[in-house]
Length: 101
Image 1 (tube, rainbow, N blue to C red):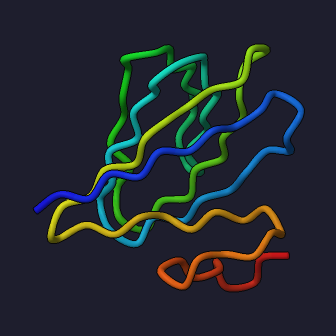
Image 2 (tube, rainbow, N blue to C red):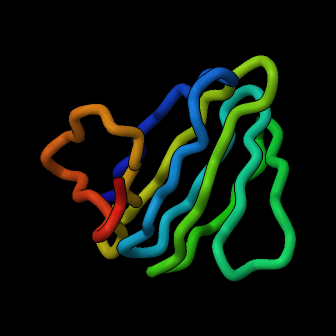
């Protein structure tokens, strides 16, 4: 079984940090996403239809392009969604990154 969750991110929202507990597919549904993975030398600009696999243990920073963006996080039976750090109440199935504000 595969779990897919869809999120919307407005351009005006602050950059969000995600910590990946298990491999996760990050796919842009609409708009553009700027994504930086800690430890990588290059940023990623992803457009609608593009995706990237986030490795277990990685930390990704994301922001939406001018028109905002919708994206999906897909996990399978061996995958877990990353943690979003924005300061709003988090669903029980997500846990905050240790040491995050």
